[in-house]
Image (cartoon, rainbow, N blue to C red; front, side, top):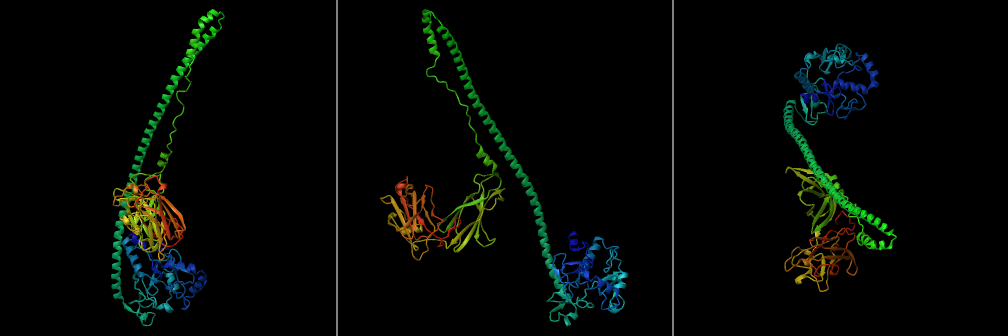
Amino acid sequence: MEALESELTCPVCLDLFEDPLQLPCQHNLCRRCFDNICRSLNKTDQDNEAEAAAEPEKEDSSPQPSDHDVTEEPFLCPTCREEADLSPGGAAATPRRNILLQNIVERFRKAAGRGEGQVLPCQICEEEPSSPVVKFCVQCNLRYCESCLSSYHPKKGALARHQLVEPTAEKKTVMCSEHDDEKVNLVCIACEVPICQLCKLVGKHKEHDVDALSTQYNERREHLGSNVLKLKSLMSNLEKFINDLEHMKQQVKEGGEQMREKINTAMDELVSILQARRDVMVEESQDMEKEKMEKLGLEETKRKDELKTCKAVTSYADEVAKETDQGCFLQAVKATNNRVTKITPTGDLLELPCDGEFPSPDFSSVAKVLRKLRVFPGQAKFLDHTMDGTSIVLHWEDEDEESANVGPKPQFELQWQKEGDGDQWITVSDIQESRYKFTPPEGSYVIVCQVRGFHVVADVHKVYGPWSGSLRLKIDHLRQMTANDCSISVSSVYNGTSGSNLLDGREDTFWCGDSTGKQWIRVEMKTEANSVQSLAMKLVPNPPVGWHESYRPPHVAVYGGDNFGNLSLLSEINIDHNDDEITLLKNINKVYRCFELKIDQDKCTRSKRSGPCYITLPELGRKKDIRPDVFK
């Protein structure tokens, strides 16, 4: 009932509709509320209205209560604020009475017990409260009190032909909006409004297709019923969804409480560990202090005894020195001198048994980690991005490397799309490492990537961290180059195979060392091929035919230029034992037609023999302006 009552409430007076009128925007309001708004917009015509009301006998100047006060001022719908044309002849000058809505309101009143004993008010009175109604005009669709009936609905003139009935016998017949005396009995198919026969014969609907009122009633009622069934289905789904929301709210509340309980438990455990370690370290400092104090005490006692002995011997020696009898002096001087010499140390230096220094504990790194404890994964940030043939390898890390996650190691979710595709992301979930390799589609476009970490809770729910910043990569005819694009020459290859096979990654072709200890590969782009802006080398992890780890080249220098007579050093790379994929050049700001790769064993500490390897040269286009976040 409450939901229905909100649909039956006037947006102006906030009461149940009373004789509702329907505006062109399909919203409704009470007739009295509509009249009041019109009068407030047309205050300048109040004098004319008063004069017209004083001369009810004049047919041409008497007000027609069924026609509302019209105004040229803009009228805004109280519900949607859409402007309605209230000027004479406008669409809203005479809004249609919504009899269906009035019927629903009356049924609602009876069901709610609000209609019993109710006195219907006059619809013309401006005073509040309105006087009780005495007559209802079928043509005007208005209720009149005694005073308004005599003033505004005279028994003479054109209004004399109107039918006045008792208010209880008020007819709910829909009359034609164009012909007041005609009931609607047809429906205009084009305008979708009920009309009368005159409208079809001589009115503005005479060129339109029409149908019987009963036929359209049955069809539209069936159509409405079908739509209502869909709405009821939606209502059922919404009710179920709201129940799910309530259940989820309770689950979230319980989960939050459990999470806080776990956090408090974990923090209490950390506090307990810290307190225990504090007690241990305080005890260790006390033990260290006690040990030093014991050493100092023993040394002090020892030195005080020595001092006491020295004082006694010194006093005795002073008395011996005062003896004037030479015989007596010489008789005692030897023993005295022996005592003085005995207690005087020769090599025993006075050194403190310990120092007063204590270790200064530094827990700043631990404190830094503790300050950054968190439950959710942190924001990831992209690092470098490399090429593997025609595939892109993305690398990322936690933006705050020193932060500490509470719980298991986070997993990652990666999204990428062609720039401009809106919400059409390609999503890759459950990535276990901080890297991912994928092959984008062929063509020239900009690819946008983003990544975020997440924890899996209870093997079902995922708790996500924030998305990283977007990484933009420009793809321009991405493909791996072959011997058809360039000419290649090498210092030496294994077993007499062609150096061109190195470009194709064949594992039966190896770049080998020569007797000079210096090896090289030269690559020259063919005239019809695009120049290269990225160069990568991939080491064969375990090729056949007698390969050894010491064969791996430890150092590679890359030179580039327009020709081999004018080369400049572009990069130098040290190769580790665990490296199996190396990008020699990236983000260079110039296109090159010639490249030379050199290995100089004199710069290395490993074996003089270079390792078997092959190179790949991804062709990424001619464009020269290479930004750090863009592959060309």
